[in-house]
Image (cartoon, rainbow, N blue to C red; front, side, top):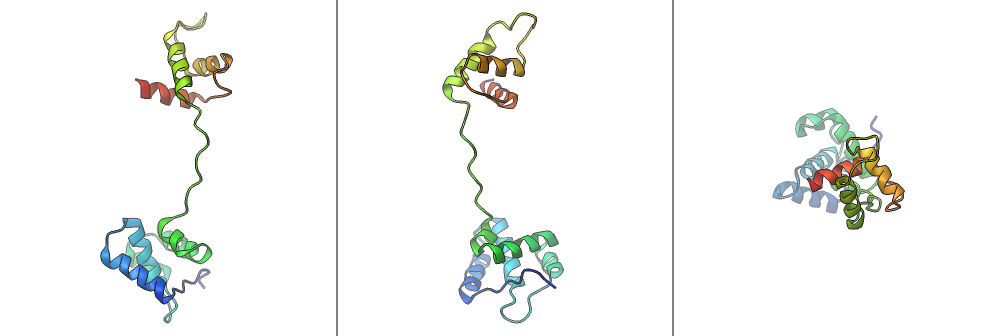
Length: 146
């Protein structure tokens, strides 16, 4: 037995049919709209997940996730996906970049013939330019600066 039963209201069904008929949306949105239309159990029995997956050319897991998103969340989330949380604050400001470049262009510490990413990160922290920074952020910044 299916765990998530999709029952569309007439307005939701009309909205989904309009999305599918116009074909002007993102491919993912069109696919999810087709899945929901075929899974609709409000007028009789909806298609099985396997039949929907075959008809829409997606995996059964995609059908299951789309059903679940519709039942647990909303039509909007089932079509477009959940909004992602914003990333943390940006650490690499212009001032930090300037200090990084100045440090990278200077002579490396005694005992080293060149700057490593770890040495550069530690140098910025020791100079109290920034509290902490990863070597990956250093690498990406230097790559961007060429």
